[in-house]
Picture (cartoon, rainbow, N blue to C red):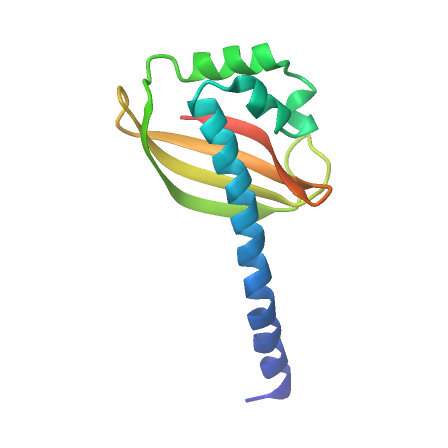
Length: 134
């Protein structure tokens, strides 16, 4: 095997655990944020959000926005991650490390909803900066 290819494969093997740990930490922040939203603890979710989300929304505005987006959905029955994408920039946001998590979520009144949650790395901590439902 050529030396350059060996070095490339070795570098990938060394980076893979870091990338997975980074994704795990980001997803832990996302799931904790979603748990707060699911249980109606909007102020806690707002406190744990990124300034990118906090700046335009007060805690009560966050509650109204998410409640309107989830109107008539009922409570969460299950949530399964279907995709995660890593990005270094997002529209209208500063360059940084971002992830985009997509979940297939079942609510009591809606059997199949797509949730997209975007955290970004801020001072070594993952914070949710966006939430969308389809």
